[in-house]
Each structure stands twice: as structure tokens, then as C-alpha cells.
Length: 373
Image (cartoon, rainbow, N blue to C red; front, side, top):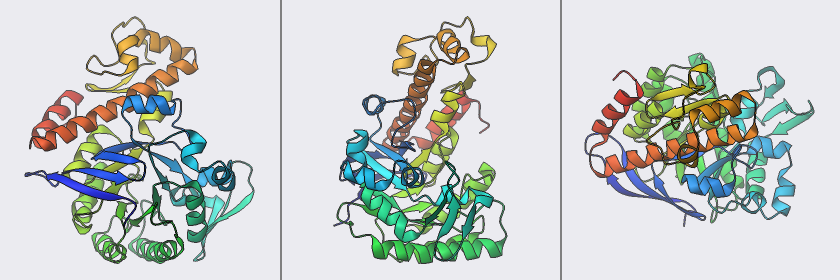
């Protein structure tokens, strides 16, 4: 039995969207779902209890960062990542691939793995498919991501092809070493850059391994959203219908809706927490930069339609004051709102699918948000 299984409840009649339940060792998650990012065993500025109140049932954590600090052996000694961070919901850990490849000149890729210098102290480190699996087994996450090479944008066809083929070879090494499949599900990652022929070839090779789930990687790396949607249009249909489909690193409201309409079930992104710390709020009527002077005497909630703790209790003026004063409470309140807002959007998307009204929801949301339809 696979550690993670997707039950499809309903398929939208006019789009490729699916309504489902993701069954994991740490709970059942309604899909489509947005996963908050807890890079270093914490979602920045909020507690696990607050995450539950926000509505999150699954979060993402980072192999690369936890490997470097505090170390996977220490976390394993603590009883695994769930116990270490006091989170009893599901956890997905990425492989560290994106992080090491984003180091640029500080890393060297070989067939064996990636040699890199730590961003913490400059020490020489090495991460391979085997070590990434060993780290993730020690962390005890519910979903384990394969160690892949994240193809940069732009990239030549030749480079993207070599990168995609290496990703498949590394995936096979990941699969061969993961010994905890009864409680951890390995997801393969489809690469291939922005080239349709490479995506098709890579998806075929990856899905032939019959894994519990599949991710689409190498997007949201600098390309336009139009290009990303085009890649999704021809890549998502290549993935098995009975397995979860995960679009990595995407979290803006418009991209969530567009991704769902193309058949994606899972998303993650640092966007809501990062822009919160920079003083920006996601709202039904577009992004608001609360730090701006126009909100100095605005005593309305961030979003009158939002039911989060922040919107129930505090005004834009108070939040602006906290942000300008660089008070930690301001970062916390903004983060709570942004994360809850995306959970509300996903709830509404699921409801729209259940009622066969997703295209209408998209039009209404985009009109309110200020997007061109």
C-alpha cells in the first residue's frame, strides 16, 4: 500500500480541475490544496496552532536547510520532524535540489551529485540523490521529493535535455534507496524546461516508474505566466489521473486558479509569508502595500471579506504602524492574514468545482482582483 493516496471525488465538467482527498499518514487533506512553506521547520512568524486555525493541514519543509542546520541526525534523534516542530499534520519535504542549483557559482554539478558551499559558513558540502533520501527518511516527512536538477530559465534545448535525463537517472537512484515506502511517498519531478518535446519525453520516463505522485518542476523560475500556463497545458495531461499532481513554487491567486483549471492538485510557495514581512497583503481586491502612507489613517480591516484573526481584530492603520516601527507583531499579523486568504481562495475553488461553477468563479475573482480576463 502506498503511504499517500489520492481519492478523486469529482471532475469538473468544463475544465480539467479535480476535487479530491489526499490520504496521508498524518491526516486527510482536501484538494486542490495550497501548502504553506516552513523552510527551517517553521512557517515563518506563525505557530503550528495558528496554522491549524488558518486551515492548513499540510506544510512544506526544506531538506537543504535542515541538512545544514540543525542536521537531520539531530531531528531524527528528536523523533522526526513532526515531533521536533510539534506539527501533527502532513509534511512534504523538498529534496534540496532547487536550493543547491540556485547557488549558481557556489555549486558544481556532477553525475554523482552536487558539490556546493554552505550559505551559512562557506563550508564545502555535498548532496546526492542517495543522501537527499537519507536526510528525508531521517526527517520522517509524509511526502518525499526526488532529488532533481532544476533547469534554469532561459536554457538551451541541449542543456534542458541533458538536465531532464539526469533528473530521471537521479530519480531511479532515489527510488532504489528509499526503504520507508510504507510511511513515506516518493514523488517524481518532471523537468524539460520550456520545451514540449522534452516535457513529453521526461514525463513518460518519470511516470513509467509508477510512483505515488508527480510534480511539475522548473516553472515559476523567471518565465512569464503565459509560458508557464502553456507548459502546464501540455504537461499536466501526461501525468496519471489517479495520482496527485503538484506544481512546485507557485502561489499567486491567479496562478492557483489557472493551475487548478489545468488539473493541478497541490501548490506551494513562499509568496504569502515573504510579502507579509515586506508589508504587503493579499486581498480579494488586489495586493495592498500596507506600509504605504495612504493607509496611515485607514481603520478598516485588511480585507473586509476575510475571517482571519488579523482582519477580525486590527486595522490597516495599526498594521502600518507596526510595520513602520518594525515590530515583530506586525509581521505575524500580516502572515496570518496572507496564509488564511490563500486557504479561503482554495476553499472557494473546491466549492466552485463541486458546483460545476469554476469558470464563473474565475471570472468573478479576476474581476474583483483587477486581473484582465
